[in-house]
Image: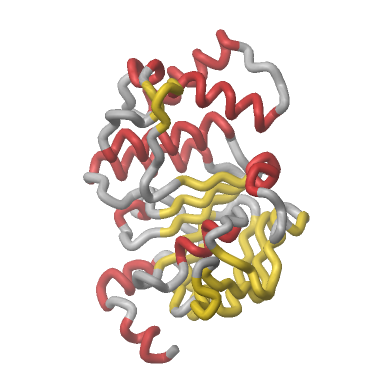
Length: 250
């Protein structure tokens, strides 16, 4: 299988506190066609990993490499990383007053593809996707995430994912704070996106989002390192027994 993401011996420290080591020799490989899940206690480095993949200035890589689709993106600009086909949803999506959802999606699509967007076909595609995600079609003309509920903001993240169709998606606790129906909708969106030519990395504390997905690998992240990898049963083990076994071992 073709490897889409390879993280080698990744070490990071906090930009505002160089003594604070976060990732400590993390290794991870994801192939095209796969769904991977990362779980771990608070403070273990899950969101740091996601942000470091986009070269966030909040974290400094002191050792290791991030290889995406054959390119070393460790020191690449965030904008270029996105254009290469990496996408991340946020735990707390931003509101952007003055920019409608429609304009945001069109501008972002054009920036990624460097091609003019056909308004008619684009609108038809977006309307269909909003219907699939049980989103109110009127939201397309509203300011981006302004006044949206938490669930609608998360659905909007999934809508962006489907419209942009990246090569690899990192979903950073997209399911947090969602009710059962909204989680099912997010899972549906992931299944609509997923195929043999892309991949998904889900960061989560819950197994709910996994119930309607075919997960290939689950990784347990403790103190900045992946200490255990297994199939989907590992997630349910964590839900039942917690992380104490792995914390004590590491």
